[in-house]
Length: 117
Image (tube, rainbow, N blue to C red; front, side, top):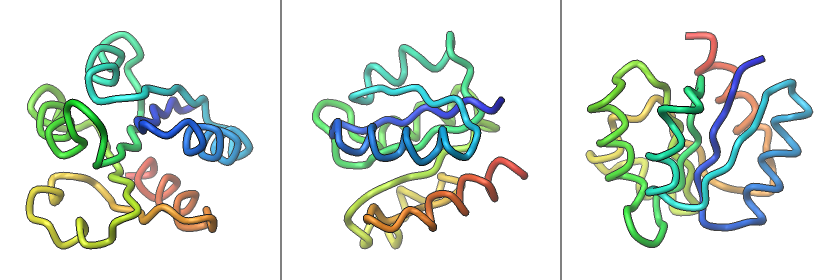
């Protein structure tokens, strides 16, 4: 079973993503901020990280940079309600970008595609 770490400061996103991804057969873990994510990754050894950009403390772009420094092969999907981040050069190190919405088809499809790489 593939392990996914969802990093977001909104509890509702954790619940929504967890329900959706567990229904797809993934094991889902949560971190509420970037610092917690960076602490969890070595022990959890996730197959994929879904990472919010705007969070208190270390933002998602900085977490992405640190994750890729330590493990360049770890797939990361950036997730944001702000589509303009898709054009931001600092987000290009990610493996995919999804815009948060109530329609989770894009999330499911992106996760499946990234994990097949």
